[in-house]
Amino acid sequence: MAGESSTRRPLFGGAISTAFPARFQDVSNIREVPDHQEVVVDPARDESLIFELLDLKGEVEDGGSALWFLRDVANEQDAGDNLVVEHSGTVELAGLRSGEAPAVAGTAIGKLAVSKGRQGREAQNIVRLYLANIRLKNAATDVVITAYEPLLINPLSESAQAVAAGPAVPAEQAGCLPMSEVFRLAVMNFDVHDWNLFNGSG
View 1: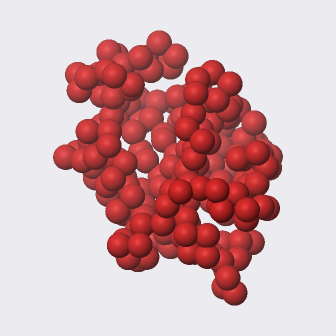
View 2 (view 1 turned 180 degrees about the horizontal axis):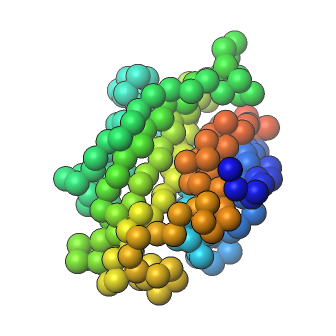
């Protein structure tokens, strides 16, 4: 594994924290981010991590919730027709309690073609999308954590200006933690310090 380390970082004003590498910068320093989201990005690799707090989707069953959110994200990005689901499962978060039991995160991984911002389909990049859904039923909240890993950068994409067009440089080669590991750490280290955060959401 690469020598890059992760540090615990506060989210949502310190009400939540998790861990990810220092190369990921807070996007809210550059542009406005909705109150229910925290977005961090590594511009040098065009990789991003998004943490969202959503009203609990009661109509979505627990077992399939991560896949449901993965398809929802793909549809939002006009990529529902090309999403290839590579994996889905669950992981127990020993450090986070939801009532009496440890919280459980559903996970799903897929590959899709997406365009940046307002760019059209001719500028689509191929990305791997890692998604975790932590269902905090006692707080009526679905936490959705998504990680984007570019696999192939389109020469017409805005991304090609920041990182070269073509296949992405493997993380190990760049001395970085692979995105799969960045995602795993962000999910496994997710912790709530102030449950009052959820009283005002919704």
